[in-house]
Length: 131
Ligand code: THU
Image 1 (tube, rainbow, N blue to C red):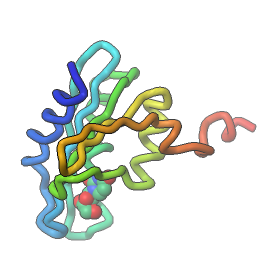
Image 2 (image 1 turned 30 degrees about the vertical axis):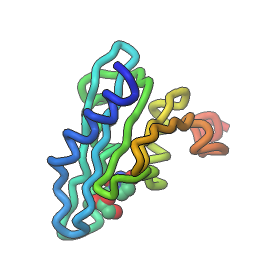
Image 3 (image 1 turned 180 degrees about the horizontal axis):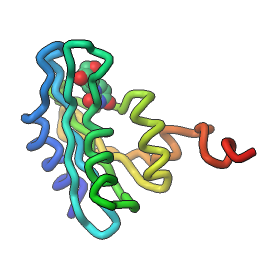
Image 4 (image 1 turned 120 degrees about the vertical axis):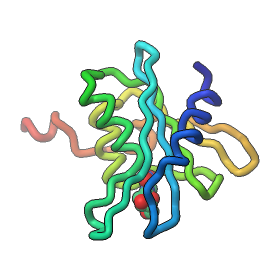
């Protein structure tokens, strides 16, 4: 599975986004250490606050199926350009894939990669919680 293939999986699933309020579609695809892919889309709600982002849907689907080890997460959006995860998703991403990477594709088709630790340094974590 290449980075491009994971991005393509995110692009395909993005079409299933439920985003009638923002008209902004997001797709995410996460690959486990064993090579299984789970996808997610943003699912909005008329209350706005009940909306969930694509990244959390992908991770929560995988976790609920028993997955524990994640290698890489691809994020795409209807902007066609690099779309970074929101703050809430970063907190969830760091909890479950601290040593993983995130891949993005820009409008020109260039692929870039960011380590989760680069994206979310100094995070609140379980080590702090236990102090
Ligand atoms: N959204 C995501 O799904 N992921 C992100 O990382 C940023 C934002 C969604 C939430 C909402 O449905 C729409 O994009 C606009 O904020």
